[in-house]
Length: 217
Image (cartoon, rainbow, N blue to C red; front, side):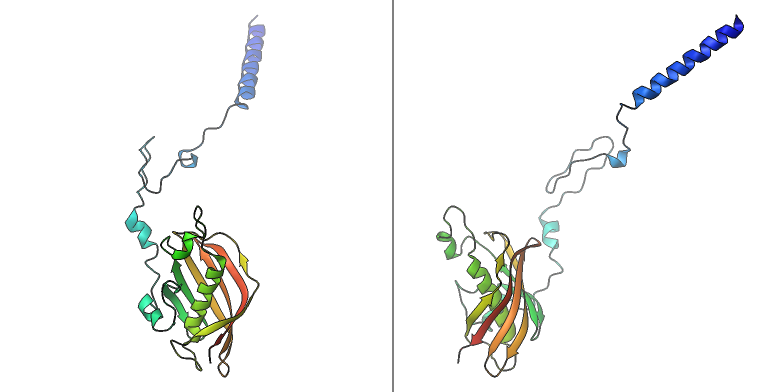
């Protein structure tokens, strides 16, 4: 009898073990604390839960500090001494990178106060694509008007533009970051060829393969 009782007990233990193993296959695993998803907030603090530390709020000071490393090479006042354009058609607010005779990076802060937004469009203001190209041409002009064969304040005309592609709308509140590179400069005739592209929040808004312009004689 003792041998039979032991055998029956072993069978029951084996059956119980099999049942536990089969049910655990349908239960969700317990994630470690570091793997659990938590909500975050840019401007606000999150309440502490489960012993977690609330993230530090990102306020105006921290957001402003994101551009602390961007230095102004040419201010708006400096640009006005180089370009002949004036309000409402001066479309470069400052230059933050500059290589003499080669390239420049400029900033255009887009604001609803600009007059073209009155009609383009009343219910959905969008910066006209041609003005985005014009802004890049002005940035190229800042480079060219400081090269041999030109002088600050000279007037230059558009001679052509090719391969323009607009990627996303540029709207009031955007900061248009433009980059141009001078490919050719004929100091004798005052003719320049350049490429350009512009970004908003790290995404390309517009690019062009080539633009040409000539100094007025």
